[in-house]
View 1 (cartoon, rainbow, N blue to C red):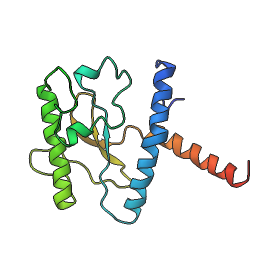
View 2: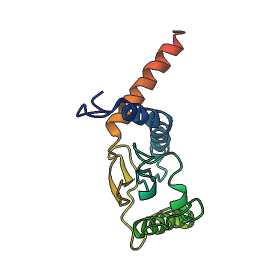
View 3: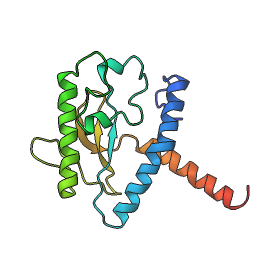
View 4: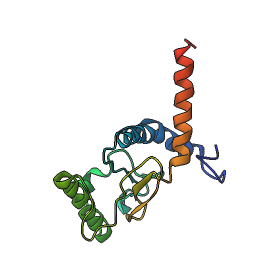
Length: 165
């Protein structure tokens, strides 16, 4: 419980949404990143938590699955009805599109005028965290405690299932 609601102030719906997100996407992605890093392959991990101003009322618990796609391909107007993208959104789309383009060209997303996207390794577990305000920051993965809970739960489940329980 402490990993998902350390202050004991979150609604149950938010806690279960976070748990499900980590279970379905977060921990499996970390497991793959760790596997590649163990083979000495360069790995770059990100977590997208930005919600556009137009979606903040509907997306109460953070960014939904796939919500970064318009930013990665810099096509914010393609899926939007009504509101023009904000300056903040346009800058985030520019940065994300540049990261992905750099990665496709060189195998490294970093480049001029971009915050550093740290190379992932299993000791530091640094990621590029796209914060709720749209700022990309290279830092220790803030989800680590939660993902560790999911990892342990999966290990226990696998052990029990291997015994036929």
